[in-house]
Image (cartoon, rainbow, N blue to C red; front, side, top):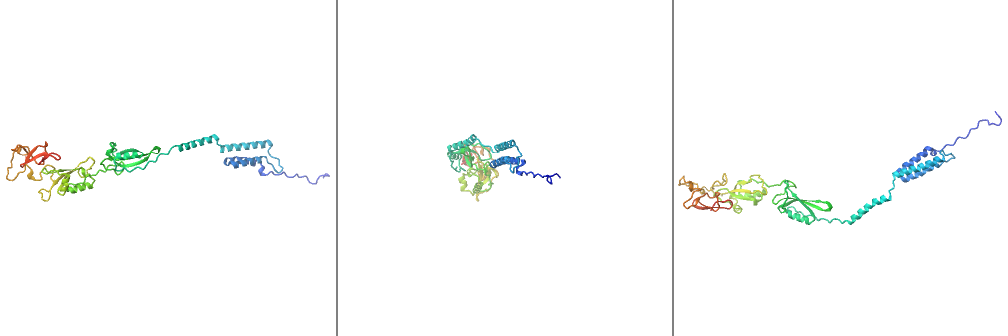
Length: 365
């Protein structure tokens, strides 16, 4: 061993350890995190950006900074640029001109709306169901409604001459500009309203009144909805005059319906005339039934000019019957038979008959 040397070799002290947060990886990680947070929350991102710049420059513990000065300057500028770009994309700033332009239409629209007067309120429309279309149109137009009309039935007829139509349904609707409209669904005067708008007209149908007395027949017609003013009367025997409605009603239990038109279940429309052919008899009458056909027989056989009375000859001259002339010059006629011309005169059984009404001309006294 040489003199003056230590007995053992010299051991240098260990190198200082760099803190983890001063490593290059952590510094770069903070820069990236600052950019991400900047995109999500701008305020927090700004704080992290400055913290990242500080970490770029700080070095503690007497350790030499691993980055040279020019590298730290480049990292600082890069951090600022990265964070500003992210902030500009994620949080764009509106220009004053754009904000003003966006606000101007709203202001103008509000001003215009305040200057435009509100439309006048339209009054409640009266119910014109069952009223004439002329009355309904006049009232609706006076109330400020725009009026339309159409056929309420399934027949889709054109509506002309409003005075001849009756309102069945009315429907109010909203129109442009705050206006109101109303559509009237109508039927011709005297027609029944359908159950629903656009449905079939529910015309009444004829009941079977053959064999019924006049009073019973009229009651059945009324119950079926047949308008009684459309009923006309005829007689069925040649020697019976047609009664008036008042005469038939006065002796309603003696007059009987022998034939009817329309028949059972026939529709009675607005143009239908109901005809009842009547025969009259009572308990004291010799004939108490209807003839097989209308206007071909006499209820009392003796009224027939061709009737053969006991004790008289069975033969007679044709000229002495319906077309012959009697000694007085007047021709022999069949009482109650149809005839022409009106005013002609004839005889039967020694009585004088004239061709006259009411109704169709017949040989009547």
